[in-house]
Length: 251
Image 1 (cartoon, rainbow, N blue to C red):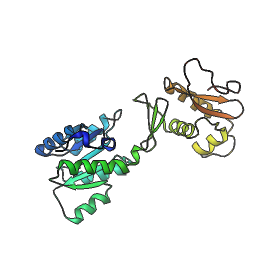
Image 2 (image 1 turned 60 degrees about the vertical axis):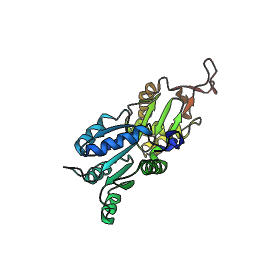
Image 3 (image 1 turned 30 degrees about the vertical axis):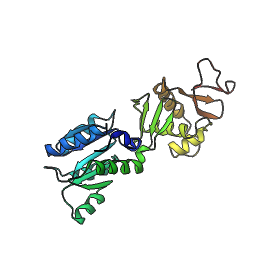
Image 4 (image 1 turned 180 degrees about the vertical axis):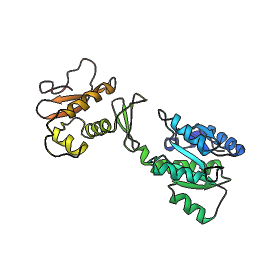
C-alpha cells in the first residue's frame, strides 16, 4: 500500500458511510479507510443506512460507499429513494456485477461512480478523489465563522449547524452573495419572495430580526442602512470602528 503522506488527501472525503452486508468487505474497507485517515461508519442494510444518515445531520457524511445488491431494499433502490428526496450526497455504488446493464442502472438512479469488487486500495482512493473533485457539495462559502453549503442549504457557525428556516437561509445567502454591499428591500422581495412592489407589511424586518441572533459569535453581523436596505458586514479587530457607522446600524 502507498504511504498516506504521498496521497493528495485535500481531495479526499473526511467522513464516509459504508453500506454493505458482507462483514469481510467492511473489514477490508475499514483497513483502507484507516490507512487513508478517513473517518467512517459501517452499516449492513439500507434501513441502518437511513438511520445513520438521519443521526449525522449535524456532522454529515461527505460520501456513501453503497453495495448495489443489499438484502431487503437494494442499494440501487436506496440511492433512487435518496435522489428522489433531494439528497445529493455523492454515492459510489459497489458491486460484484460487471455487466453493462448493471452499470447503466446504477448511473440512471444517480450514482456518481461504479466500482467492481474486488478493488485495490489505490483504485478506491483514486475514485474517492475523482468523485469529490467534481462534487458541487465541495463548493462551500466561508464568511467569518460561517460556512455555507449552497447545495445542501446548510449553514455552520464555528463548526456547529445553524437551524435556519428555508426563508432565513435564502435571506442569508443573498446577503452573503452581496456581502459588504447594501441589498435593497425591493431586491429582497424579488429574490426571496418573488414579489414586486411593497407588500405593506414589515415581514422582511421580522425575518431579519429572527435571523440576527443565529449569527451570534460568527464574526459577521447584519446592518440596517437607513432608507436603503441591509448589508452583511464582517467584524474587524476588537475595538475597530465599523465602516459607515454614520449611515448604518445593526439590524
